[in-house]
Length: 267
Image 1 (cartoon, rainbow, N blue to C red):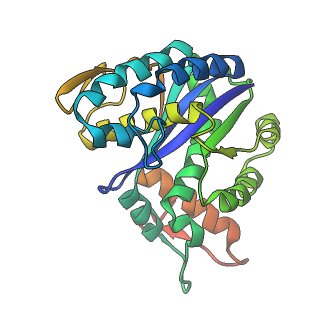
Image 2 (image 1 turned 90 degrees about the horizontal axis):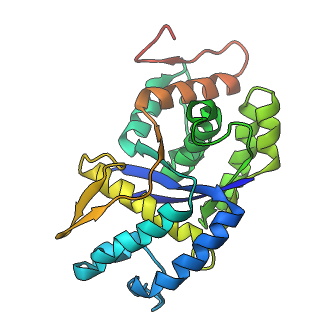
Image 3 (image 1 turned 60 degrees about the vertical axis):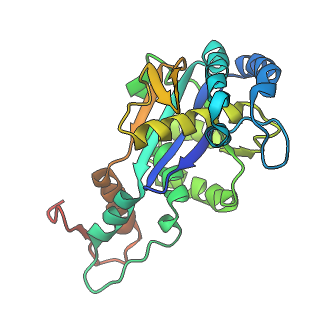
């Protein structure tokens, strides 16, 4: 089984990223040893400990940014690939507003939470598009997804069951049911700090119109080399989100009721 460690990064401008890295348990064990050796290069966190955080590096600035390539090199040395999911919160709001049901006021409840929506869209894209990146990951290989600990984890575990129930029956869904997502503390599980790096790096690039896989990116006064490719990109568009919410609404409507997408009423 492979293990995908994923973290989130959000910007005030509405860019929302879930990103991380995928490797075997053996590779992650070797990664953790090497990462622990260079943690003295990380700035102190809010608790006074040396735990890598991309935001903490940017906040420290100066020569601390020069240490980023050392961390990127450890990631590149041990991981199978990186994965980056992106969406814009404004697209989420617009997609929900497009779905209408005559004589009904639709409420999206928990799906108004960008993290929960991104979690579902990420899993949907990652698992349903596995054949599209078979050159990087064997589509038949199980992948356990491990997230940084979140306050929403109880809700997300419930949403995971709903996600599985909404999938078409088949071997893929049976495999997914065997490996539900887990939530761990990034201070104790160092692979989550690698996920923090990739998520923070990706958001930093996307905010500036730079592709996250670009080889060299200027951060502060330093040009930092990107060493952790290949990369799986999962970009969630407004249209895709609207399609998801339309299907979800139709599944839950009372008999005899209909719903439609105001942008594509005949869909």
